[in-house]
Image 1 (cartoon, one colour):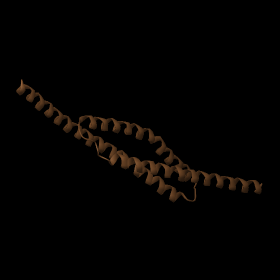
Image 2 (tube, rainbow, N blue to C red):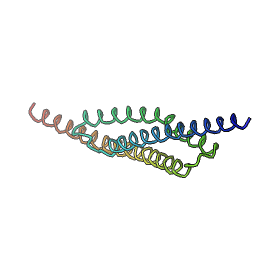
Image 3 (tube, rainbow, N blue to C red):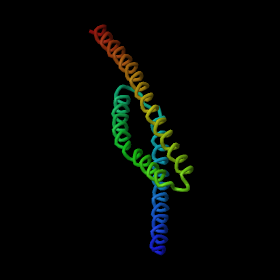
Image 4 (spheres, helix red, strand yellow):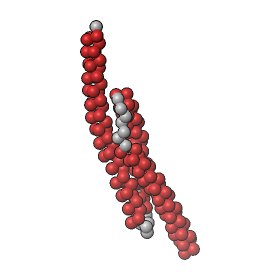
Length: 146
């Protein structure tokens, strides 16, 4: 009947609106998380000395694990946007903009994560070499005293 068709259409419209609101909330949460983690990764305060740099490496490895685990949440936002597009949601342009923003932030985070790892490896190599030189100097001083 016509009444059932109208009720069905209204119900589908409400469901789409609900899914769009859910998408907006998830996209905003992901964007915030990505922004905060990007700030953390950009901090290159590795400390002074070999122990501090080793601790920074371990912290970075933990962050890599956390970020890798977050990938499924980013993918869920992409999937939600694809569903809304398939349903021909009227606000799909805004949804796509939000999805693109999240994906851009994700790519920036992954790139900076890789760059920081490289910087950490360099700092570790330099710090290790400096530690070796200091150990050699101490050894030579001990030899001279004896």
